[in-house]
Amino acid sequence: MKRRELLASMGAALGTAGLANLGLAGTEPPGSQLLTIQNASFVLRWQPTRNMVSLSADAPPPVLFARQGVPVVLDVHNTLDEYTAMHWHGIRVPNDMDGVPYLTQFPIAGGETYRYGFTPPDAGTYWYHPHCMTMTQMAHGLTGVLVVREAEDPGFDADQVINLRDFRLDESDAFLDAYTLGGAARAGTLGNVMTANWLHAPVYDQPAGGLVRLRLANTDTTRIYRLTLTGAEARIIAWDGHPLSGPAELPGAAEPLALAPGQRVDIAVAVPAGEGREVFLKTRMGTGDKTMATLRAVGTGPARSLAELKPLPANPIPEPNLATAQTHEFVFGWSPEGTVPNDGLCGSLGATFWSINRVPWAGDNAPGTEPLAELDHGKSYILRLRNESPNRHPVHLHGLVFRPLRSNKRTLAPYWTDTVLLLKDETIDIALVADNPGDWAFHCHVIEHQKTGLAGFIRVT
Ligand code: C2O
Ligand code: CU
Ligand code: CU
Image (cartoon, rainbow, N blue to C red; front, side, top):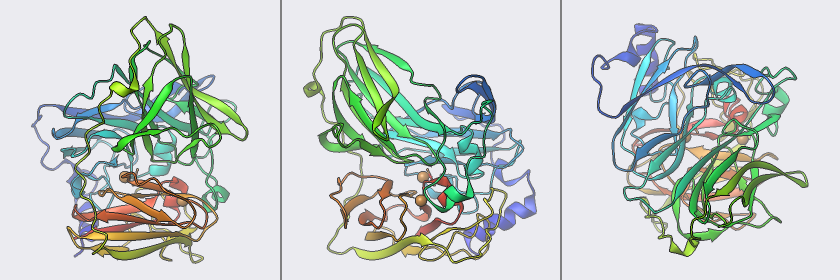
């Protein structure tokens, strides 16, 4: 029996109370954190929005901290009356800690606790979100940042995490449906309230003259942010968690930095030395720029220079051998008409519009789902990602880190990543070493696309 079928049948046999709790009784390893998924209420705009989903009753999901090479234990307790599962986006975890329903675990029922434990091999900015009831739970708030600190302190005066995301609210600040079928079939459904850490244009005090590490995460279900930073000297130092080999200039106002759903960027900012000076993070909207967050200089420190920063230590990612790499092609496009996805307790939008290699994801608990490709553990591969649709897709692979090699449309930065944005009609080759065994989810991070077919998995054995 295949593992996903085994998990499904075990779940059926044990009912809702069993599998996720096995082995948990009575042990509290040091440093374990309890994450209680619960309904929350928060003022996103004018009045409290209820039915939010977070890890406390009245605040956004907190920034979680871990340290490179140090084990973490995260006990995810579900108090909702629907299923869930937690995924640690970008972190190279063992497969059974990856949080993907039926592929790596049985969904976590209401009242259950599931213990996740892993040792992050890489430092950087990552994030967490559910992978079951993904559309509603993410749209209602359950997206948080997970910072893995370097083994050695890189010497910033401060860290500022900014979680960028939208909400879709009506005039009374109640949730609208998280998606429309028209959006799901095309570019996705944008929210109408844009937030940074659930706030409208927050202002964060930072030490005047100091060096601040800005960690930006796009955890939205749809929107591609187009970012500019003005008012300070700044350099990109890491992309999708992984340090650049050297600091890179931020693109100018003419071409803002595209940050797609799932992606993160770390920016070193030299805060101006004058008390009250401001640094603006904006996103391009049509021809105007909308302020998402502001850093304000406070105090009277001496001005530090970006040149003082040592480069961040590289993460231990194996370099693919392009001379021996075999190529696998993946075509992202429309799905054949009429497939109705199976709803395996993890929610379905009830429609299929998308496919990978003409196979739409059949639903989370569909029997007989085969991997899109089988890779040999330890070997190098080129994955050719071909977009046959007029829409953009941030394509995300779990468990492995890859390097973009080339595109038929533009020059790509060769930064290590887990999520690459495929433009209209674009073909991108990426390279990786299949160094982490397991069944790894592979999908578009526009959640409406993911949930209507643009998903699959790659097996490494
Ligand atoms: Cu960010 Cu499959 O996930
Ligand atoms: Cu992921
Ligand atoms: Cu997509």
